[in-house]
Structures are given as C-alpha cells and as structure tokens.
Length: 498
Image (cartoon, rainbow, N blue to C red; front, side):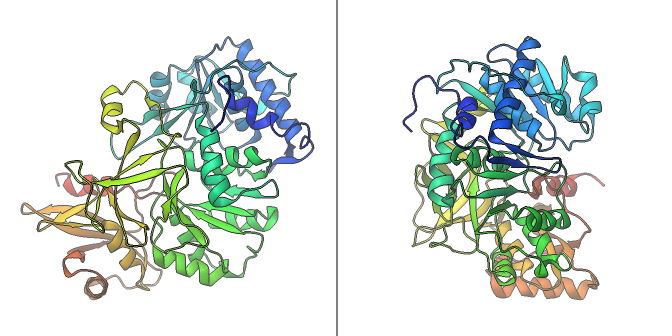
C-alpha cells in the first residue's frame, strides 16, 4: 500500500467520494437514503459532538447499536478527530454484559441507539444517542499517521472474556485493495447488503469500508435478520453483492417460498464466519443459479484472506490465498506438514492486528513475527485449495486419529432428515467419543431408527472411525450473533456434573 505517512482513514473513506459522488446514495436505510455528501456532514457533526464532550486523541468511544447512518457517522467521526471507535455487539441482553467493554476500553463516551440506551446508561460515563447527531460543518481531520491506532474490534474467541483487537489506520485500505478489489471486483456500480452487522469485522468490511473505498452504495438493516427480512430487503433494494453466514444461507434455503423470490440483482454471494458445507453450496446454486464464494477471515486479520473465486471454486473448501496474503500450515512442533496433511494455519498480511489490548501473553502467543496464528486447522490439496478441518480446540482425537467435526457435520447435512448439526468430542469412561447434536427437519420421527440410519449414512461417506457414536436430537444449537456454532458450549454441557 502506497499511503502517505500522515493518513486518516476516517477522512479518506468519505472525502475520496467528494465532490464527484456527493449526490450519490451511500446508504439505503429504512428511514431514508443518505448521500455521500449527507454522510460527510453527519460524520463531521459526530466529530463536533465528541470534541464538545471533551474526547481527545486516542481516547476510546464505545459504539453500541444496530446498523444505521448514525452508527457509520459516529465511527468515521471518531477516527476523524483521532479518537478510537470501539464497536460492540448490540444484541447482548444484560447491562453486565457490557461492563467488561466499558472497563476494558476505558471508554470516555458511549454512543448508543434507542434499543441499547437503557442497558448502557448505568455504566456509561457519558451517553450519546447516535440518532440525535446532527450534520455539522467540516472538522479538520486529526494528523494521524498510517501506523497509528484507528479502531478496536472485540473478538470473543472460544472461551473467556472478549479481547480487544487493535487495528491501525492502514489496515482498512489493505483489505480494500486485496480482497474487495481483487477477489470481489467491487466497483462504484455495486450495492452491498450484509446480514452480518457493522460491529463484526466481516460485516464492517462488507457494508462500510469496501463500498466507500470505491464509491458504491450499501443497504443497512437496523435489527435482527430473519429469512423473511433478508428476502424482502433483497427484492426491495436489489443489491449486487450479498454477504451472509452459512447458517443463514441454510435457513434461507429451508424457508417456505424462498425459491420463488427474486434474487436476480445479485452477481456475487459471499460466505464467511464458519465453514460452508458443500451441500448448502450445491442447494443454493440449484435454487438460485448463484455461486457462493466461501472464504475464511478473522477479526485479527480484519477480513477474508483465503477465498474461492468465480473461476476457481471447490465447494466445501475455503479457496486459495487472497492476493497480498501468505499462508502456511505447521504441525505442533512448528514444522511444515507434509502435503495433504492437516495442521495449524498461520497467515501473513499487512491488515493484521497490532496487538490484543492489555493481553500481553495472548499477543506473544498469537503474533509470531510477521505471522499470525489463526487457531484453525487446515490441509491443502494438490490444486492448492485450503480445506477447513475445524478449530485447533474443536478437533477430536479418537483412538489416536484426528477427526474433523466439520466433515461429520457436512455429511449429516446431506441426509434429508437433518436441518442442522454440531459435532463435539465427549469423554466416556476415559475415552473420547464423537457426539452429534442434530436438529431434525419438521415432521421427522426422531427415534433410534433414525440414529442408526444417520450413523450408517456417515460411515458410507467418511472414514469408518469418523461416524458419531452418539446422537442427540435438539431444537436449537448455541450460536454467536453471526450464526457460528459454539461447540465449546456443547462440550461444557456434556462435561457438567449431573
């Protein structure tokens, strides 16, 4: 990236679209369309309010709310004055859930929407309603440097309290020029729509940084997404780039009447946040004639660094490295694995986090020179495609052999009686056994006969030792807000004393 030493990404993302696109719609939302000119004034209004509240350079500003123009203006306005915006998940239920974010970030101001105000009021030093921010005159951008802190994102990981991932001013342009331009081929003619919220790294790139980098338009939905709202939004706003998580793609396919809906405006579909089963890829292609580009990214790397392309697709795989990123797979001793074998994946690219805030030991364990330890286990086939084998702490070792929960879940999903599944290792009499939690399709008889049928189904598609020894039928699975299955909660449930 050829960026000047003095660089402010909050200013750049808007000013690069002025004056030529000042009257072009930047955001389609339920309340009104917002042009780039309007958004520029709104971001300056947010910057002025923060300055009036005494926010200084590098002080943190927590943002808790659903996706709205006010959210965007608050984020970009904070960076404009050199402050550090810190978006957090707006759907947590209790005030106590947010105490950690406020205490950890030392936030000077908390910006909320109406739905979050009551939860944050008891713990916020200063509360500002994002929907009450007014347009303002231009504020001179802070003379930040390309290697200065720009924003934080929280990463929950598999266990423990969320960790703040510190990103720098130059990280956003790097993801835009690599994945957005070279894989998506995004242009100003596009309209993006992401079912993952702006507080999440995946949704943040999809519906904010990528479109603003090229002067495209976005569609923001202020609330939870359901198959109904997603399909209605696509038909109404006609996005050209659609981003979602595998779980929601599967829910859309299972939604009554979905195949008759008009998705013809979409030219690319993208999946991330968890592995996309090949069966879901095939069903989506059959139903809508659209190819899903599955990829893998992380909060730490800011967006997708390994992806399928339209001209290079392997259903079930994560594709190949995105230009600008390098990958390597090592064994437990740090030695490169033999071709085709699974190991821990490391990634190198200039959008990587600077550090985990106030997490020195975690930072040292995860950032190894130019390389970041992803915590994902992968293998590479002869054609260079990367295949996800599960999280390093999700892998199951049975009789001395590693078993991928993803492979078993994908096989189960191919059975007509299975809607969703999650697989974990559980201890039985001191030995590790494979257990599958299965959500059956409606009107399915969940009895011992189906258990045996599903086990035999897996045996015919996988290695004999990869079938689930136990199957429990459930009505729901624990998931993150982006739809990623939390297998560790299932493991904890099994390990809890009766």
